[in-house]
Image (cartoon, rainbow, N blue to C red; front, side):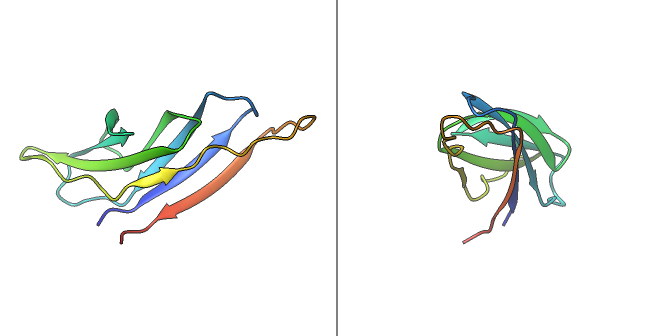
Length: 104
């Protein structure tokens, strides 16, 4: 089973998208990895960490390992909730939250 780790940084309170860094445990058989957001591939990397833009909405994220034989099954789904609503008159300069998804 693969573990996905999530690191979210929001710069402002009114974002349609947010920058998120995902990290996962290495697979000894993988030469590279593909990150999927809501079922669509959004990034490929040889590292076990990638930073991407995701919608500011409930978002499903998976990762696969890739090698010469093909692509592995998708990891368990990590569901990223929308960012919290900021009350009027307040401004967020930075939010940092770490979430770990564990396999079933």
